[in-house]
Length: 250
Ligand code: ADP
Ligand code: MG
Image (cartoon, rainbow, N blue to C red; front, side, top):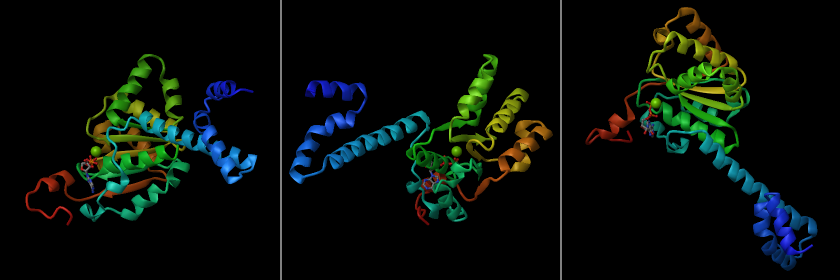
């Protein structure tokens, strides 16, 4: 077989890392007296690494995160009442394997979205399918899917994710249809897909945005079963950053 044929076949099989590396690695193999198996193992390792890297990049792109915020950039000192251990335990990712819900609850500006994005990025880097929505955006998409008679298909597609982030529950009240669709969606995903929900509303006030007692208790039942509830208490981070002369790290 000629190099030309080999290149063509590697190309056809999308073995791009092997295609890039096989000649230089063959030189190294000759110099270091590698066995054929070792040479092959190194090449396959290059290919596997490249694919993992590509998958991570693709997962992050598909997640449609509004910003890239890293868990590592979170300043826990700025919010001393936050249970740091719980956040770090979430970062280990077992909640994903068990499809457990996570609820970040507290006033605006305390880093709920930041930590939700940080966890989403970690999940993407582990190769998982992730999608970020504001709750309003999701409800609009659900309504559109229903109008187009595509709701089951849309729910099925959501169900292929490992993690959905639903940001800003409670900022905008729902119509009766919207509330019902959100309930239907969360019921369909419960125990299959992990949800991270951020909200400024204590559970006792959820009925005000959902507008229906029974639906609210049904939704809360699904969302709080085996859930990780993390409370954010303190003063807005951005506000503190703008205060002149304030010890920003304190
Ligand atoms: P929330 O979702 O609770 O309203 P955000 O996550 O949007 O708050 O935070 C507002 C801004 O402040 C973001 O730019 C975020 O990165 C930053 N921020 C908030 N808390 C912290 C923190 N403890 N450490 C670092 N940045 C923070
Ligand atoms: Mg937010």
